[in-house]
Amino acid sequence: MSLHVDLSWILEVAERAGRHDPAADDLGVPLAAVARHRAELLEQPVYGGAYARAAALVHTLGRCRWLERSNLTVACAVAVMYLSASGIAVDPTREQLTALARELYDPRCTAARIAEHLRTWAP
Image (tube, rainbow, N blue to C red; front, side):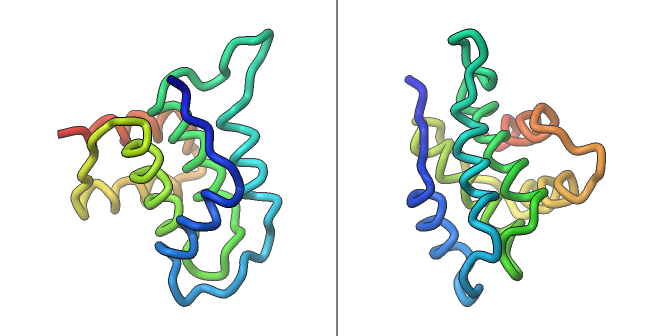
């Protein structure tokens, strides 16, 4: 099963995780994240599997500024919620979340590297 989310799902996660953050500065970023995690080439998914799709969402939402203060918090929350909704039990530690945030700050950050981080979250 391939779980696909939409803009309203991302905005709901952002509302919960990014409390006290004003409205989004750039709604194009979450729209791009939606399109990216659904991407297909020649009718084949570009991002195969839940970890890869979650990583595509996180990479776009965490690297592109679209919220005033809580981009990284929301990106991490999206990862947890997406993997959970995909049937993958995750319970990241504070250290694992910090490691993901550090990865998102790294200019060499890629969706593949984020997927590697997310795989470490499984119990």
